[in-house]
Image 1 (cartoon, rainbow, N blue to C red):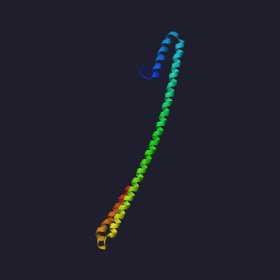
Image 2 (image 1 turned 45 degrees about the vertical axis):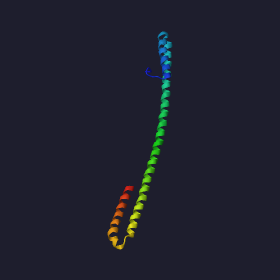
Image 3 (image 1 turned 180 degrees about the vertical axis):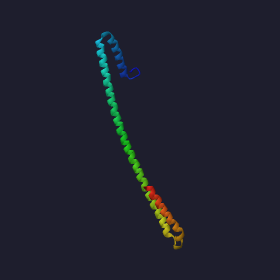
Image 4 (image 1 turned 90 degrees about the vertical axis):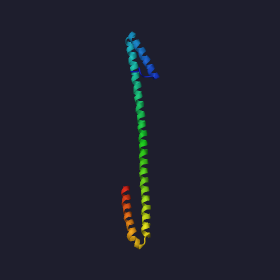
Length: 132
């Protein structure tokens, strides 16, 4: 299973295994011990690699959690900014409509301003509905 690996440590390990296999043919138990030792070394190497990967995974998960928290904060700030903007805009609109209503003469109030009062109520209803 190491034949496709191109790392220097893997090449060394593969050469050791090959030479160990050749030795095991001629020396019997000495070759078996060497093969066991190499197998144990490989197992230890894999365990170390697994631990390193788990540490890296945890680091990346922590980084992701921090980034998600930053994103949620920015989204909340943006939402609050939109609410504040809409409130200011509504205040300006309500003030403008109110001023126009107050500036109408008695004769005009019954016609033009009456319609504007209806408009002001509609604007109020629309903006209050959007903020919630």
